[in-house]
Length: 429
Image 1: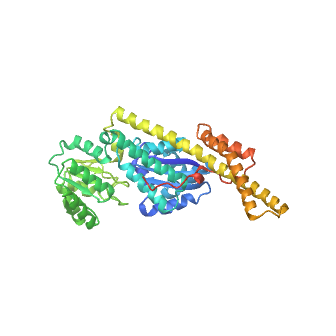
Image 2 (image 1 turned 90 degrees about the vertical axis):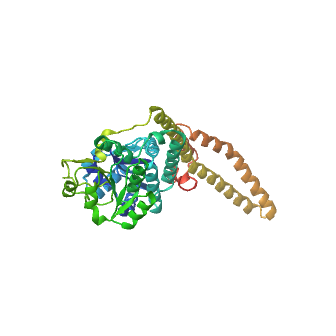
Image 3 (image 1 turned 30 degrees about the vertical axis):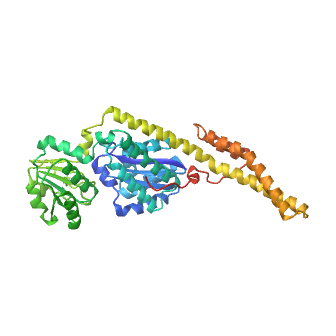
């Protein structure tokens, strides 16, 4: 099988399109099952965040796999395939490996170097593992991508130079509000993005901080953890009127902040970090209300890390891609080598049966001696060639050696893929 990644992000689609592509947690298992049920898709991992939705897949063919994935995405999003195609990027084999490592290291993030994507990728991998849609090829890719992301943050300064989306949004808000010190912030939502917002605001010294959420218990726990104040969700309108800055990051499928609600709360700066958006589409142009959403952030692309830090991460990514491709080429030869050894063992077994049928006077001990001798001869004859062919196969262009072995020895290796040869390794990085 081959690797294929297909997706849309802030680079290729606006928020309105990303909203239609976002995959709710409860819908994710169904999407994964639908993907691997397609004729050309064998494995699938779905990464869905506030500014990207992409699928990593192991496919039988490029065109067949791409067609299957696009059709499933069109069905789930309700976007016609012809319209969807204009927002998608596609990476195949080596390019798919490179893209996944850039994503995990933060190089492809809206705010280069942010580390939140690493946790999101881990969650996507775990979800696919639980749904049993990540086979050995994607297990290896995902685990390696997570290791690459950890290396990038541990071995370079990109973690310090990079920022979260929340921090970038606060930078934009500061241009409108001025110094955020003394401003009254309100966070709507106590999920992953809401918690990140609370943590970021707390570190920035903005406060006193208030939190509201449909689930009061989650708001209470988050407020207690950061010394904030939990506000009942039913008091949202009053809380908005008392706030200068609002960070909204709910998982609601309908707008939380309507035009009427925001008009009553002006003046106000709203950071809408939710996908789908929390601010109603018609809530624009309200006097005294500034809305900053994912599209606004994509347009500014603030606070890029220093070139030296980016270059250091790119070097890590390049070396890790080379390492993964070498493994991929070497893994491709493994089923063929196994088939060759099986063929040799079968020949030895057949010849021993013929010999024993002719020489019935052989004792059990003699038969065992003859059997051991023949097996040792075969193992010694095959050892050096198989070691060497594995080395050669790991080099660029090494995929030809598996084909040559199969042709030379007339080996039948059904579904010989790198994924079949991956040894089981440790848990997620």
